Length: 334
Image (cartoon, rainbow, N blue to C red):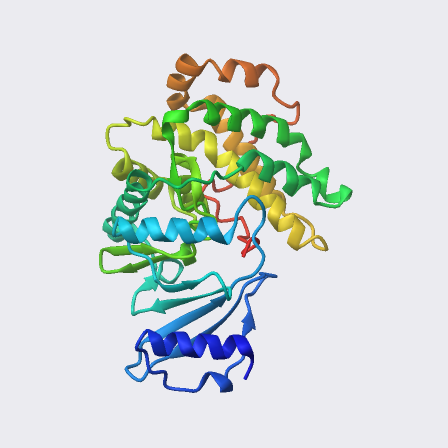
């Protein structure tokens, strides 16, 4: 038995949990898609399952200290998460996996609007109650993600970088709407039991624009337009935070990040044209959507990026879905 396994076994004992099987008979598995965390799932004598996550690499400026501090705030504000123990010294977490299903396991249709409302309200609760001290460097992430690609892959998306950075600059000016955010709301990180929602995997929690969490979930969950509208309306029914406009600006950023992360992982395959079309269409929506008028007036931004828009952003006549279903989602940062 390794030293780490002995420490984990002792932690379960201290939590008063009796496992069904000895940890000596289990091996840590690496997360799929090149993740750096390792994990194992175990079960206690009552049938309750637990996820043991052995910490992998975190990309700067994120640290395990920030993660620990953020988890402490969640506990203080009674925001549900599944972490029973976060051992920074030995680098592992013990999380409970109950009978709730993650969002990716649920067949979402119009009859599940109540679940979207519950998710939206949990996002808002996180945004309003926490006071995370670290910040999510979205612009630097976009730049570095592109630079890490081979040159042959960079040319596929580099023409979009400047306009993405302009959008991020606009969002940065909207300081009043920078809040404590999860920043990794993949469907697999959203768990639902009836109408009770909790989020898992808070490694990249930090201050960010409130539209980032909403946009990331909208795209990664491939929500239909009516579902997207339901999520946004439940979060900001009177559009007090100009959430509709901010999501409009943020969605191209999310598409850009997902594409660069996918290219980094699948460089031997050709990037499907639909992925670039989704990015381009989302940028065009920023220009053409009537909801952008408020931002045009308040921040005087859109006339600038329209004037300097890359030449390749010509109107596209097609029926490509704008919901993000054509994006292959990575677990790139685990």
